[in-house]
Amino acid sequence: IALLRSREESIRELAGWTLRNLAVNAENKVLIVEEGGLVPLIALLHSMNERAQEHAAGALRSLSVNAENQNLIVQNLGLPPLVALLHSQNAAVQEQAVVCIRNLSVNDENEIKIVQEGALPPLIKLLQSPVERIQEHAAGALRNLSVNNDNKVKIVIEGALPHLIALLRSREESIRELAGWTLRNLAVNAENKVLIVEEGGLVPLIALLHSMNERAQEHAAGALRSLSVNAENQNLIVQNLGLPPLVALLHSQNAAVQEQAVVCIRNLSVNDENEIKIVQEGALPPLIKLLQSPVERIQEHAAGALRNLSVNNDNKVKIVIEGALPHLIALLRSR
Image (cartoon, rainbow, N blue to C red; front, side, top):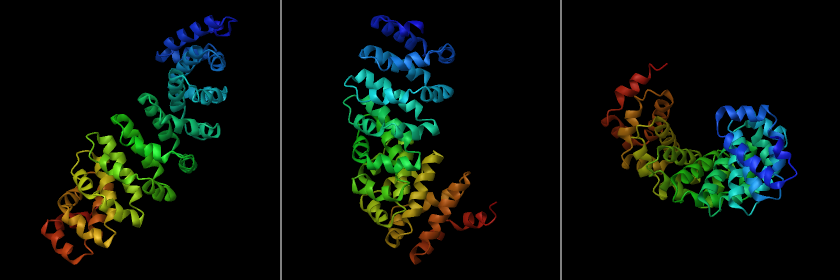
């Protein structure tokens, strides 16, 4: 740690590199900070030597996995130089800085501070990086930041939507998943429900429902769940062939996937035209089966969807033929 302050640049670089290696160890993450390593590592981020920048950011990347260190790095003014390094022309430096910021963004207080420090424009630019790992970590940072309601607006204002939507078509499953998750968070905002669709988000989100990755399915269905609150989007989701994969996900063995899909179908079933199409798509048997789910929220949303569908006279007959009555009657005794 003392050598991080050496007059010799090569010595500072090697000391930073060694601490970067040591910081991978869980106990060392605590000890390096206890020994006063944070301040000189943060100072090394300001070096004009890109290798020294990379190793300092790499050490802080590992240290920032520790929750207490996340606060200390920000308190010791680590954010400004880390954000500055997002603009680096060196991909190795960018990667260490963006992973560190992704780790820091897990912390609720840091969600606000990172945005105040001006991190959104470079993070959004990194979504277009030719290095897929950097794309992934930038999307992961934006996913964390988008939990905050104010950030939901700011991320869209800064122009993230087209780049996040483009990443839904990435070759990398992990990137598609993170892009879907971020859009799911952003779609909670009323204005964003319109903007995501205007930017062409519906078709790739519907395509993501076909993923073999259950988390990707969940986030795509979760985004469509929020988008389907909007009346115009209800028509567009069905027109863009969203119903078949949503109905298929009602059969999922994953309760989180089931829940997002059933709420989306419940929202779509508010629309008079969709009442018929949802039943034609074969949704009644899985909806009725979900009345028996061990998860009460899923029972509730399945019952809500059937309530909407039962407004239609033909559906009144079909719902009973499909065997819903005993399960609906049993739910009259629900806690």
